[in-house]
Length: 150
Ligand SMILES: [Zn+2]
Image (cartoon, rainbow, N blue to C red):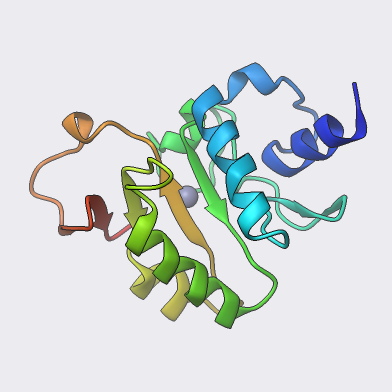
């Protein structure tokens, strides 16, 4: 396994898990293209240093986040940039072209993930098919992307 693959596994999985095939292939590829645009972007680990555990793939018994979270199906990423201002910029970018350029279908509303965050916050993106989305949620579609309250 080369160093890039090791770093990717470290970044997308909690400790003890290392099977890239647990994660949806398409979201891994989209994440790769985001890294070329935002070199400082990370999910769990930056420069090989672990900061979070459950911001990418989550095991079924994970108590972090929602019970039926798309993170447990390998369809979601909580993206991070080093500063809150950079996360805000990333959020705006995703809202603008996250669907048309990268194929993300949903984002969590920044009111919770950035504005109410004590730290720098995060940008949740996922590729859940919109046909699977529950009706009646507080959500709006902006530039093709479904933005919902977590
Ligand atoms: Zn998330």
